[in-house]
Image (tube, rainbow, N blue to C red; front, side, top):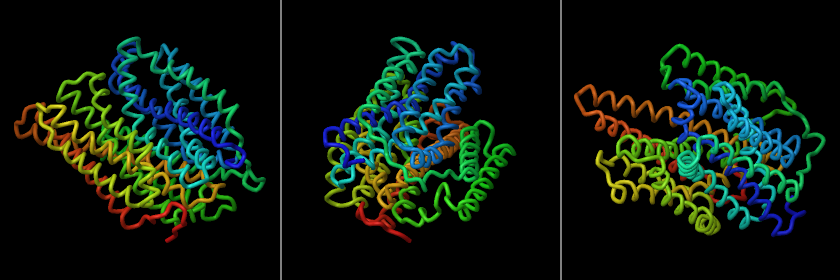
Length: 474
């Protein structure tokens, strides 16, 4: 693909891909700010309201792996544009929803479209940029969008909901989606697919998609229903059983959905393990710190969004400019490990934030460290995951790493929320004030997030190769 495009056209195509990806990333968080308005308007209960978020997560997480492989089989440009069209139409349905069922169904379709765009977009970027220097710079921008887009969504969601109404958090996707679709037609050449590659492992696809969707369902409902409940335990056991069936199918399939040999690639295997832990750390930072600012400090949604701006600005500077230079100078491993260590320190600092915390002294230092750390680390993680695979399997590798981030984030958030609730209840039991107990629970969650990030740094230091071009196998 890269040989067919001049330099200007490549970068224009890249920014269109990034715009489409940003639309997907924003939608994972922009809805959270508007949930109270949606509840009042459509009459949701507390429990049913969760499905406005969960329906999206369920299909998004469930179809990431399959979407990446479908891009390799049927053409990545074609599938990316299909995902954009599906997401945009679903956004329109969300905006026009006047019943609970219609909104939840449209959110599920949004998640499916988002999975296609996220899985295929990364592989398209890797196929456009084949030179190491260009690829590192491109992945730096993509890394910032993936890591920082969520907190931008909070700011945008707060503004749109306050200035207009909740319908606009979905309507804003329409002009963006239409523009991205048209520009993709003009700028993106189709990837060539060999005849022998056009085979879909249907049994494997059903098994792994079912396993992922059931796992996401169990995780997102774990805190509400109970982690030791029969339903949660049974669903997790079923998910594991389907995963085992998937592995058996793949070991015997002539053209497997996911060749098991991929997991013998050292950089890919390590990057996926790091991705699970890193996503859990990011969720600790984003969601738990937002809860601290909202419920302990009493910040408004707009104030919370503005509080994330320093981290986003720093993350953008490092991701887009500095991270690329560090990778070209030191390879993948050193900036990744350094970034994860800085993020761990930033999360640990959050664990000392008091009830009467001050933004400058108790929030800003952590935001700065996490912004630097995320800006340094995200680019190398993505490069490591994609560095060992051949071009024909880049969509699959993209789906695998996106699935790791998705599952790590969902599981991490549930685990951290459970830790926070357990500590809060313990403090309440010994007579602590409500706000003190709440803050104490958040402290434990921040410590757990810092530990996740530190473990990810240790894995990177021990197992990652230094070069992004040399294959490493165990």
